[in-house]
Image (cartoon, rainbow, N blue to C red):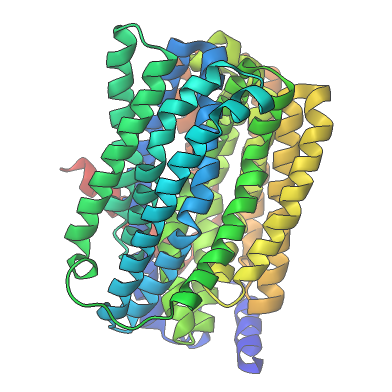
Length: 529
């Protein structure tokens, strides 16, 4: 521990753009991991970026076809599916990422195979039980709790999505453990959204609105499960063929149950706003709030892209004792997550109303909720990678404790605020909880793992944030930005241009240039195809 503290102090005292080779053990290893993380994050970014862009277009299309009221009914039905998928997956997604990565890092394919098989069989049973539960309780959920009769028929249909959705999520997690981010996103995100939209448009033209979207959701989940399963067989054929090794099923389930607790409380933290809105207010309010949540989630794009590959890397590095390496990677990755997320947040400040109008005029009233939620996600980008460090080491229980406490806070604030100030109250409750969890993670990362995502040179990030967000706020208050979609795109480009110019003017570190070269090379490679 004393050696780690000495190394950390040396890095902090340096505070310059260039870090001497002697300040970081395993310099070549560090470069290798950073190059790997950047390359795979690039795959994830392009895949997830396309998924978000397509999801934006798909959600705007669905919202315009259904309207806020009927969209709200569908959102409630899908929220039920997401809620029940928590016990059906049982935290095995996190178990796959940790244990499959760990065993493959040791060259033990037999045990990795056993983990995959056991988790898949377990989830098949729980997923089937989930279908039964939703169908059996659909009347109580729809009429007694939400007081929305249309929801009962929607749950009867969409309940059949439970099993394929559970399996699709597990297969996608296995692909992440194999570090195949491209197929993980294509298999789960893209295939589900594309097939759901296509089927819905056909059924809508035949006269089916609510019935059309819930049926399309079921078909989309089946397609996602099949695609993801095929990708697992292609990327990791050794996971499905051959004899398995001896594993501690109890240990695997204990770890997964910790992830289950985190997922459960995370769902409460992020989704309780929709549930409380559905209980106290109308389906239309749920529909408007859901669109605000979707747009605010754009601010998670870069954090997800980096952390999806960062988690298995941390699992590998930590179990080999690479504490200083983990700290170095954390700082570099967090710096880029924040720098890339800032312009997105600035864009939402300037053009949020215009972007909401794309979904329909009735959704523009969600601007206040959108900015509050996006601000919370911006704060979370500073600590999201610390959460990965806690999750992939022996301190996962602190993630669970953080979210458990804040989930209780979120529910309490929602119940107090939603009846009084509607969707803005739901956004305040959720945003305050997300921000509080982020602060807790930063403190725990420093105390438990002796890692912190920032150092003295991070003042540059602060200056970029002040200038970029200050300009965005000034434009929002003094300029009437048109709501046309092409103005929104132009504003997005300007926000990134301003942030990029400031960042370059302040100077790039050696690691920044490495990341930048990799990103530019990836972009040019994609455009040249």
